[in-house]
Image 1 (spheres, helix red, strand yellow):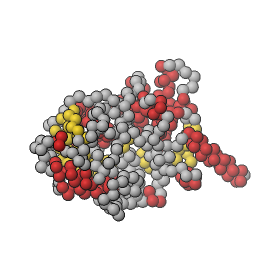
Image 2 (cartoon, helix red, strand yellow; image 1 turned 90 degrees about the vertical axis):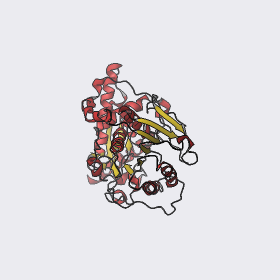
Image 3 (cartoon, helix red, strand yellow; image 1 turned 90 degrees about the horizontal axis):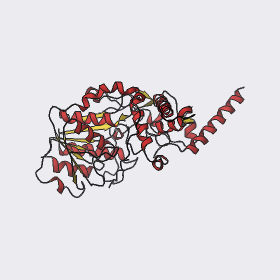
Image 4 (cartoon, one colour; image 1 turned 30 degrees about the vertical axis):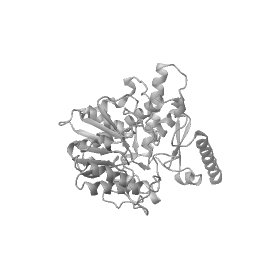
Length: 402
């Protein structure tokens, strides 16, 4: 059974509103907190991980009634640890014990945030088929069979040699998600909605895949940046994803939609430069509040190192260099996935500055021990080694060309 990582519980650091230049743009998302025309009874399978709390918060703000069904290992709460009120918690196990859902109880819609194995989806969808109107499942753009070309919702999907595999890893994740999608549609034909997010980012992310960059910019010194500033990236702020999924449920939408930023909307240069800028602004405010000569992130500077050099030194994309994949070869289409269908259906994107600032504030609020062991990105010592090697190689080329 997949054991989802604990939500990191800590409060956001308090910063003066003047520090947040993006606050003025928040009006774009005000509709997400308006009361819905008709309150829905929403059943959430899972709901205590990264996406779940953000979805619950958005749904409560719009007046919906929430029931969370999960193993009860974590209390339903916001990503920052604040408890939800008015949320029903039912304990059970989608593999063996649905008794808490009762025999006749109904909900308007169900959101399945914990679909990893098709057999689990078959069990839950079969049980709920006559008791819900719509079944929405959280999938992933990893379902696509090929990443060397741009994909849209009609692209070929990954297939597993052994569909009964019970191991979730980089080799099986996409294929299992594809099987979960098919299982839901098979049990509830015409009543399923599949949302395929890209990389989900923002405050509360336990993987640190995006958090690495604002945290590294905040640390100071020379920062290794991968590839070129033009390399494309795609992601989705967890709050934009939660709001979009809620809109789809409210409309009774069915079908398949990729949920991530538009191709060409963001580059690795955008990510790096925004993180540097936001970290500097945050540290400026910090010195105003508590006078200091040189805050940690005041001198962070990026050095761009080509993909080939990183590969030679076994610096891996995505894990060592989160968010980024070289835009050629087997992953030439990885950051060029179509989002046109979702945008037409109402998916909106908050400014990157907002995501970076909120993520940094959340990261700073975590215990020091947690921040000392990030889940992704290069360790400082390893980063320094690679940068030293790059500068030595550049110096050698300069001497030879001179």
